[in-house]
Image (cartoon, rainbow over all chains, first blue to last red; front, side, top):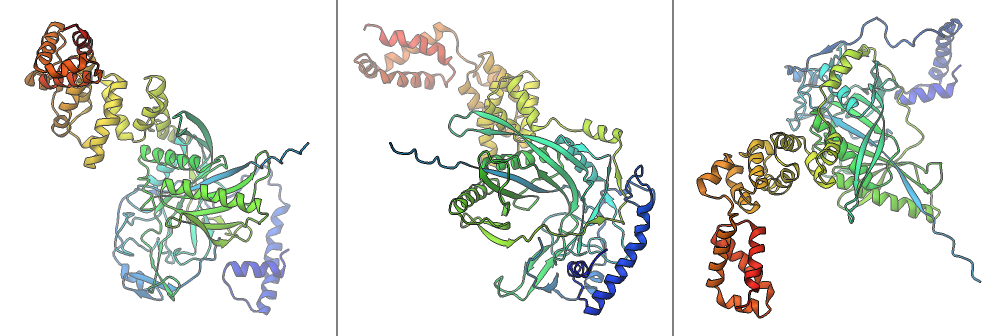
Length: 97
Length: 496
């Protein structure tokens, strides 16, 4: 079970601005999702390795070979603002840990 | 009877380091953009670095190899199964709003490295093992450039993402360090190791090696740790040492005064030689880690791991031990030689072709080192090759020439190289060791300086040095110095 305080905390961490109605609504919805997933707890997983991947594949790597991306301007076009060669963002005080 | 004054409380510091080390790959950890330092802003970016929708990161295989090699060099266990995770936080230098890092299954864990501490006064060396908690791979973030003329006056920031996605290894030590000196030595040994391995340039000024310090103090004997403070912003080894020494004093003073120590991040101010509070830490941060779905796990087979282990060079600590134990060098010489891999390999090559280790070490750590320093050269850039130095050292060992002649030959050898034996032959520099020949030279010098001789015999014994100097001058320094002194004294002291 998660309560409304946990929903507020997660919303804050994800920088989501929720209305009071949404907080209640998401608490109900999240609990219903968690209840559904909770069915898995009925299984005996004592001999099962934790899953870290959806498909059986590992060690996909690339060679250390330089390939300069040719369309830098396309990336700048996706940014809200720029100044010269820099991306421009509102000044943010460092508040992460 | 007066009561004994209460014993002053002794404190000890408990210190751990988190070191970020930039790997010397050509391209980024998950994409093919360049990692070169100092390029124009935002020229090394691409859709993967910037987290554009639909892109797929792919691990640079060189990053994995470098990380495993660093882990092996730090005596770590290499994880047979490892994965990447997303560490989520919001800051404008992080284009995706998460950093791809490793959380619960790092590539390497449970290692150690050995540091050597030299007592400043006695020069005595003590060794200490520092535990390595873990080593993991992750991507670097971009850099913020603050707009406006002053930091506080600016209303916006400018971002350069060239550094975003540059491969890092983060190495976390156990809280085994107890002083600024130990921490600085740990950081230096770490840099020696990554440089020996060739996995990083370890350049602190360019940020290739960044150390964050965690530090607390507690009364000696207490198990429980004090409140931990993090210090950042040291960009030299001496800054690490000084920041820690400052912080230890600050924390002890606070405890003694009954003031609280806050769990916080403090910045080292190099100009003011102090730490200042940057921000308080409220509990542990909630990064909401989860497995990175776009990157499949990494499995390192035993064969692969052992192949990489076999490719490791002899490491600095191994070299120091060998130089001291097998070659009988002083701890000091061993440290100086092993500090830099090219110097150590030059020394090894010199000894390998038959030079006396102690003599070779002296030449390398003194005259050659001074030359390299003055000329801003590395040892592989000079004319004097290891076999030439070995030849010269052997000429000295066999008393064909003396040390002084060796020093005179050195400038030419350093710039142009050549065969020391051939130079000795061509310029007639070989040592004069025939007692009769030396005696004749002494007689000549005594006869040419009657006044000084009289003064000497009248008691001014210091003039012996004058006569030695005259003999050296006359022979261009070629006489055997020991034999010369042996023969000179009786002649000086002889009754006129």
